Structure formats: C-alpha cells, structure tokens
Amino acid sequence: MNTHLGLIEIKPEFVQRWKEWGSKLMGELKEEALITLKEEQLLQEHMFLVEIESKQYLGFFSEGKSMPANMERLINKLHRKLLDESRVRRIEGTLLYSIKNNE
Image (cartoon, rainbow, N blue to C red):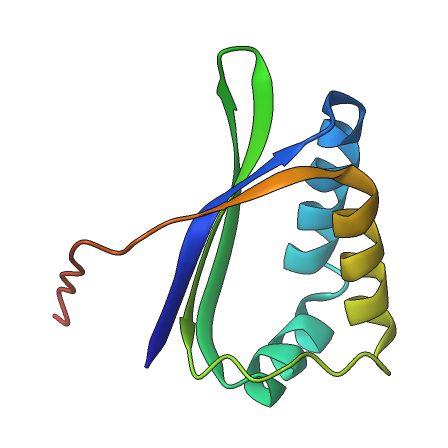
C-alpha cells in the first residue's frame, strides 16, 4: 500500500477556489469523488489548507494503490486544472509512522 503526502504551495488568489472545490467534493460531487477513489484504488484522500510564513499551502495525504486518474472524468479534469493553475511548487513528504485505532 502506498502513502502520498506533502504540501503544495498555491497562489494566494486561489485559496477561496480551493475552499469552494473542497465543499463541492464533500457535497454535490461526493458520489463521483468516491467513484474516482475506487478507480484509483485509494482507501482515503485528504487535503487541507495551511498558512506558513504568509504563504498558502495545500496539505495532502492519500493511502492506497494509487492508480492513474481517469482523465475522461470531468471531476478529474477540473481537479487537475485547478492544481495546474494554482500550484507554485510541490513538496513531497515522508511518512514517519502511522498508527490506527480500529476500535
């Protein structure tokens, strides 16, 4: 199982668009987002916003097999477009430990 995590520095003018995109993914697009997770064989995917020294970053974490996204799907095209337009740089992270409480 693969784990991908890190930070993506984004242009500050895209913060609101990312908040709106996150709301759509958790709301009206949730069913389609779940389908893409299954296609990509991901167990979970998380993205969050953080500010460090007046710069805006998206933090990301995904766990699973991580197959390539189906770029025929509109949701994936929109996600990729937003990433491409807003990204300044991507910083990969290294998982040091993972503890799960399965109770």
